[in-house]
Image (tube, rainbow, N blue to C red; front, side, top):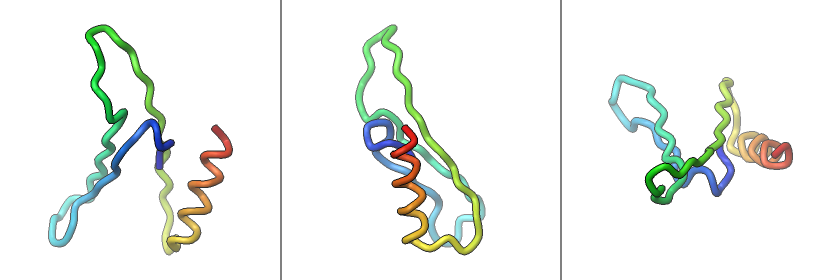
Length: 65
């Protein structure tokens, strides 16, 4: 999970791919030479987390920022 302004996509392999990579598309904008930028992200690992629970965790994360 990431704040909306820090990441525009989170993706992972689909189907029969054997790896479980996680790709974070951070910033979503071009940076000028020498410009610094910061992006935040949080990874939550758990079993049996429902979609509703994941959304609740995301909302709590945003409150903490």
